[in-house]
Length: 361
Image (cartoon, rainbow, N blue to C red):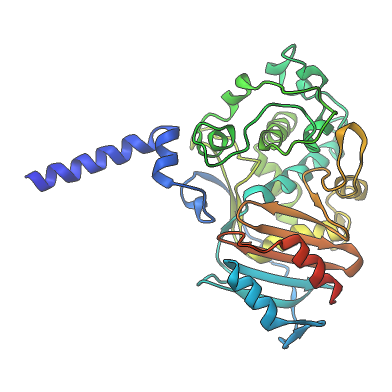
């Protein structure tokens, strides 16, 4: 009887802890690439006729880069997948720690780049007039509040909105953790404040991308997942099913600052879409000008040399970057895509690794 009571107590504590934000934070501890298992989600179905990159013969070197050295760097830094794709050929595709080509990995902030693409699609469709519109045209709750009327979609896209936030995922009371583990994303709009005037300085804050998600939802009157599937995902000829995590099961909202869950090869297809200036096998999914705007530095309105519309910029390319070292790197001059996924970033400076590898090809 005593043993049964202990079991019941444990179950009660477990349910109680998982029923609130701090409890979920404590129960699940810190974020992990398997977190797609703990959140409800909306599906992104695979294609019935998938596109597959050509599998090139596996050699000891990729260009002038030693495969053994690449593997040693990947292994030493807790990677689970490393892909090098050039001219649509898989020059290298290696998996580690029991992961395979069919293993799902949480994108974390790589999802920001997908959300940016949806803004471009919504502008092309006429749902959004331009990036110069104030966000309050769509987020009416913020009208007349603390200067939000001066915050434009462009400010939010390039992280110069001035919206106050705490980006720490290690503080259960911080905003990023609340966005990640919370179940009231829409309600969070009411609690936003500003730090400084928009268009004056860069500050990387995930709340900006969540606002972009709200704008997509309201402008298109569709869920973010449905619109992604309609405009982009279903046209990328994906090999595997994927999904986008939402905050709650009933009428949930996508966590657009993170949490698109897919496989390495299919993540690479966003890189291929951008590498081809928004064109996928002859069909223009995104305006070429949007791809250029998103990935070329602009110093106006607080912009910086290393970031544009939810893409990080490097010397010779640009990349989607997620927590724990999830990357889709694109180098247009080399017609190159590199995907690195991992349980942790490790000690490697991955963008520098990608740039070095590109120089060997």
